[in-house]
Image (cartoon, rainbow, N blue to C red; front, side, top):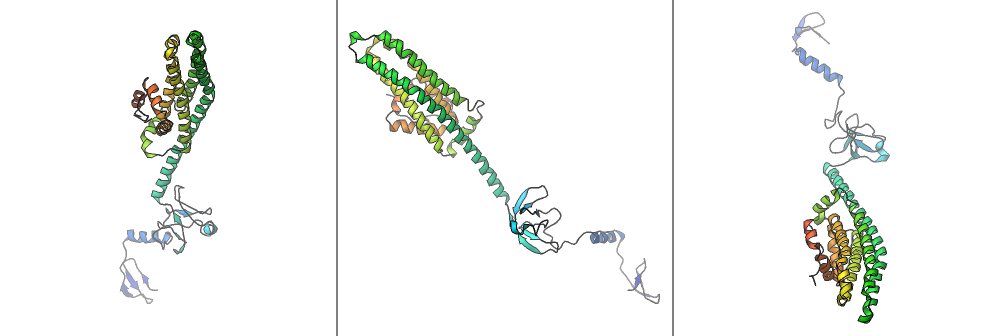
Length: 322
């Protein structure tokens, strides 16, 4: 209770110097005053920048990022309490009063990567589905046309040579070939329209080895194999039937290319966006014994060169040419 003067002398109640006090420099004294003004923090692992518990059960940092969660049933009791790096929830007295489930940084990154991969996969599935719609519509339209081509040529070939009217045959079959070509061109345009800028194709080429085909892609491959098989077997059969019809052979053989070419373009367009589908198509066609026929007809108009030009190589894996 003794007083101390400015020089550090301790003065007793009678006014005599009873001792000497070690005085603090002025700056240190100010620091001590500052410390008194700040609230005492018994837990040095948390401060004013630490994440805080919210009533919703989320643990949010000062930038409003969710960095953890707390049991919602208890969150309201700890709302505003700081949380340390280990997830300990600290009350104003410095006691640990709960535990938060903190989200690790690598978990955030994995979730983000997974989310990006999911979005990419969803895009591939959507594209495959839209392509299937176009191919199915083409199949429905072109099957009756191809059937008429086959029946018309078969009927003419079945007649005795002297009774054949090859000019009439050409006049009947030619518009059917042109109609079939138009159907395939429409499908080709629809498929290419799915990626007008080439963005998806560019991304697809870098991911081909890292992904498995989706059910939508298997369905697309089945439809493509049907379309390829229908068109190529019709052409192959027709070429053989008109072999002994000189006029029909001369007039019709150059026209088959207008059926083959859009089919080739469809396959290459699909391959650019979903390369793996071509391998599936090749497997289906080979399984049906049609691989060599498709390869023979489409190979003759540059199938492999076009695929190699797109960096797809021997994506179809068809049998050797007949």
